[in-house]
Length: 120
Ligand code: SF4
Image (cartoon, rainbow, N blue to C red; front, side):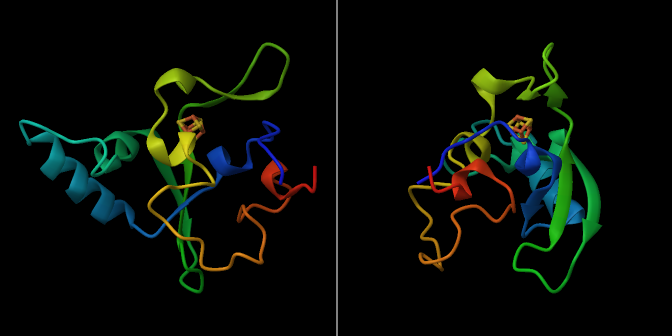
């Protein structure tokens, strides 16, 4: 099983089932809530950090975004500017306790060239 090699594909192409409009509505709802449980949803965290790129309706996760926190470090290596506090969708990628991968025989990561798909 592979591991993260800091290639940055996932941060430059965040793929979600939620449209920008839905993310915005969820964000505006949750931001008004007096108590937000991050275990329930981190949509309120991720909406402000994403820039919508395009939609591909033929995909399971059709909405593609780029993250504003994606940077290159002083050595030119892809990095996360908020790494210690990055949301669960990032810290758990591509393993999520509460999500079963539909295709266990297929590549772990949907990103071609991702270190998680390397044989290691
Ligand atoms: S918050 Fe960090 S790890 Fe998550 S997509 Fe953005 S740059 Fe990548």
